[in-house]
Length: 177
Image (cartoon, rainbow, N blue to C red; front, side, top):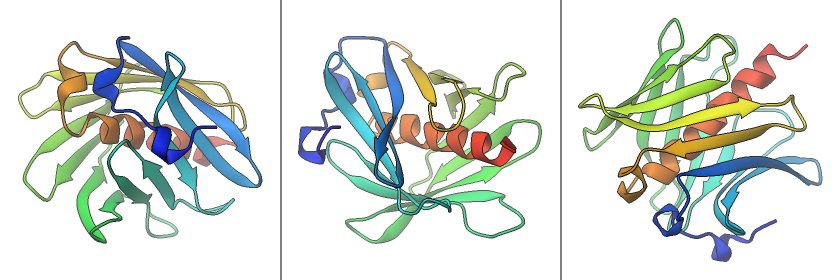
């Protein structure tokens, strides 16, 4: 398990893809995005049940939360150092969502394929940023994030990879018996 001080910027990775792995950490759900023997992000749920998770990147920490009980139509993204929401992901229908940052930048998040475990982030000009492929079942989820050539230079690419994985985990939880 990587420590936050050991989290590296994704731009340092020489590979075009990195892997999300679920690790055991007591009773908490904990995931790391890693490759080349380095950790590039972590995602830790605050409680065994619930949707509040803390995302750590090389330079920032965020919380992801899906408020509400019966209707989960949005996810809030909050930067912890400034204690303010920086983005909202609004869920649409048919496997589509929109991520809108408070600074006006937006991305589409859409499901590809029929499994519900493969998703893509697309920027506002229609360019693919990354594809996230999930596999496995709860307790042993794994995912592969494939970055487009220039995407690793984007300021928010680690946040996108983390938020996408968060969504895949929530979908897996919601669909499990």
